[in-house]
Image (cartoon, rainbow, N blue to C red; front, side):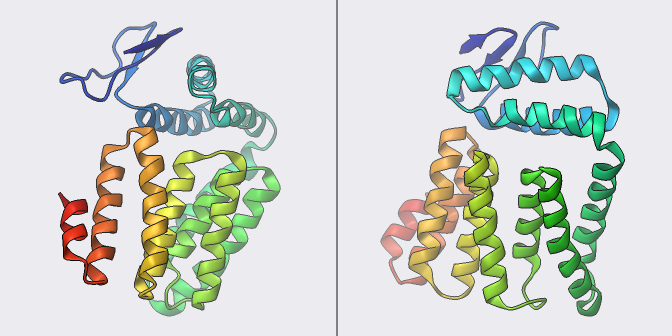
Length: 240
């Protein structure tokens, strides 16, 4: 168990894990759980302006920076304060458009093509606002749901852009999602060696963050790749 300030990070191997308990301490069973707390908390602050919650998030972000050398959420903390104070209406509108476009991409082909184009434009608008993490989300959705709406080269380009941005801003969780989606893109095109490499990169980050569900998903994806190339022994090894 790691205890710094008001945040307690509980070991993944412990049998009993607690939810947040004391007023002056928060407990998480993994870095991934802590990161998700920060992601969701920052969005909640943006929507509500809860200054007490924001003070807790600042301490948690400082803990992540000091304990893991990861300053991504500390930088996000400053950005969310700026967006809340200076760009509230603009970013709220972009969030609404993101949700509408995401839903629209699951609709009939003609309509989905329109939403696909709007999602790519929305990524650029988020980038102009300085919200690179939300731009990555747009590119990931477009890459995941773009089949039949645009060319494979365009989808590949969007996924690679999401990789580059996530890597540049230090968003480990976002980078792992981009690796996974890019792996699926290559797997669907029978480019199994490339797919396996991207899935393994996702696995490394998921292991680093302690995301047990993400690790299992990555291992299953790697097992699927081995099965596709006829290597049943390795497929079974990763599937276990």
